[in-house]
Length: 151
Image (cartoon, rainbow, N blue to C red; front, side, top):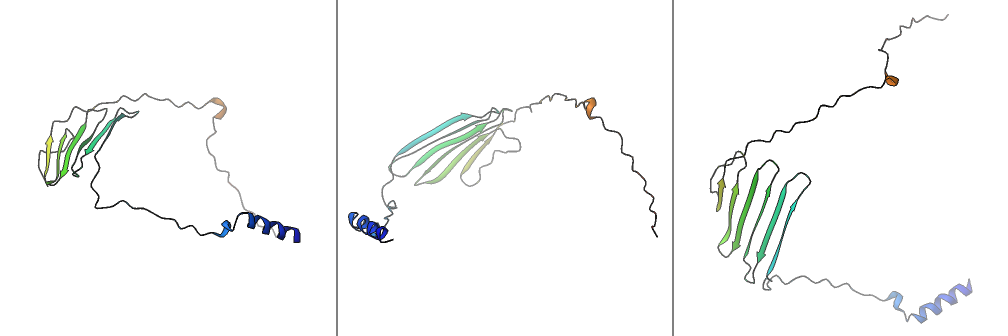
């Protein structure tokens, strides 16, 4: 026991007391009043169902942002939203052929509705389920049990 205490004292002395030293964590937050930095990014991808997704956005040093995003599915339904956000506010234009949309312009948004394409009819294969002969079950027949009182 005494050897363990001496060993720990030697290790603590060798580390110079750094085991118990307090190191505060300093978090830094971006300055909300700093000038915006220009940026530009985007992507375009197609998933396994043929749906195309895209997005592109860029901003300048004044804080103005412009971009677009959209999709097109395998049935030919599509939507593209183009937008600008700057000192004049947020403005968007929606171009689409989604069923049920009208060309209306609510809240500084321009909607251009186009006719929808004819629906795609998918033919599903007919699947026949066959039960192998080893798994043929007899119909259910309840067994009548006569209860007899034992005296």
